[in-house]
Length: 356
Picture 1 (tube, rainbow, N blue to C red):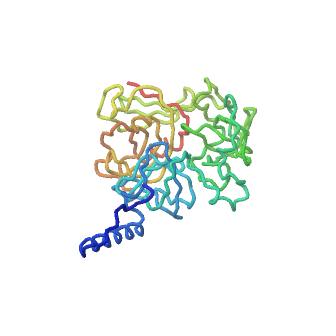
Picture 2 (picture 1 turned 135 degrees about the vertical axis):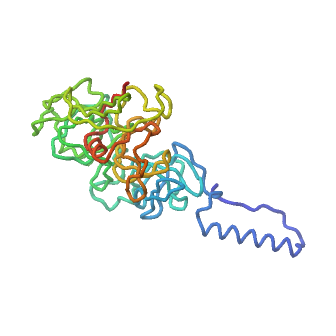
Picture 3 (picture 1 turned 45 degrees about the vertical axis):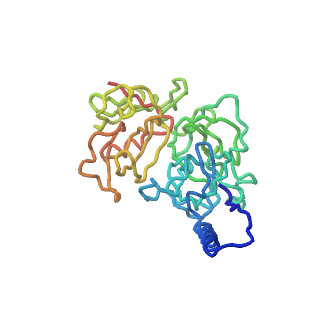
């Protein structure tokens, strides 16, 4: 609701109570405008809407009922708005990170958006150009081109510039799918259900690298393997609870995990059988509403059920809870060593097999 109007018909005479009532109502409206975060005056949003962060350092919170700070958002950042307002908050995606923001920290404009900086926020950055978003400049190709990372550890960024947030990092030898022409020296690559950016100087277009072992072929390469001996992937034996890290057919490590109590094939709260692919990674401490607790080393592979690998359940200070290794709601929970190993081993696009 953009504006509030008080309609009425002027009367030649007003009683004392009528005048007082109108003055009180006017005062309430003024105070509401000063507060700036009343849900009744915030525009209603749903999936597909976008907004702009209007306060520098606005907190991205983990949940409406839990104020754990996931990140501090920069002024002018474009975000995807999923729902709201609810309890004076909007549910948003900020550079791929799901969270919540208070209504007075965001201007919801109803336009489309993919969490990129606005022109105003990046105009002073000479590496960006005038648009402020590499996504608007991509010349998409008819089909992606698979190339390999030829550097030790390369940042995967939210946009085409060193100013953009780092979403992930890939080790040398990882195969990635470039989907279009470079912008500002950064190549757009497939990342989950969208795109991310890697500096093109770190990519090898002929498939050769300076490394003795290329660790993996990415999902969708049609069985592409490397000089390192094959695809890097993860196996989950749901019957035994064993998680195995593979390169080709060679076992790299094994870890015991806690899985769901639900043994159905595809229930919402089961560790569902089938072939999945890693879609997101997030290492810091974060709140999960399913357990009303905290986790670290999040590696998502089944977004439809919010399933993924993560640590045992923790408290808000990062300490493992007494029953933190119990049954899950479908996720794969690991001890500290296993959670860290899986997080470091996995990359977005990696194949995950779940079987009995």
